[in-house]
Length: 249
Image (tube, rainbow, N blue to C red; front, top):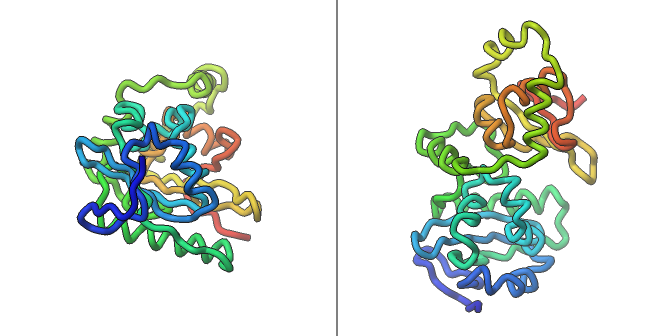
């Protein structure tokens, strides 16, 4: 069941769904085609996660997919939803954002500005990254590294990931100087790019401080990462990995 104008002490939410499990269908129906900011809350601990979306229904539908939770289980909120279950969480829509008559870049900028406002206001526990839309320039604290590590415990690797790791180990022989290259690259930043579906242009999705953080996020081994960076190959038919910024030609 949902209720309007519930106050969590810092702001007045637009709507509150007290049980994300039983309120699933209403959550998806109420927010179809609406842009805005949402807040997951673990009811017992009070731990929260702030997110944003152009279409809240489409975005929130992902959280109700076990495939998505498994794929992105390095995200602390995904791991928490798997461990505790949806009934342990409430969901708030903290703000709807009117993006009519805006260009896509303008809308994205406004949405991220509002998401950043609530990230700064609430300091949500489940948000590993504290910058809306990008981790560029962000360095994980020791606490954050511990959270990432905790989120990984007990994970079962997918068949796809096992296959990729196996290929990297035995199916595809790396050059003889791989160990030397990996040693030199150990502390390099990794820039993860994807392609905009509309413009087909490369977009910087995330930046990590080193191979270890990247491997945790992408759910693979550092050796696999090095192979795809070294060979300049598309990872999982989606990600382009580089050790330096890719500039537009």
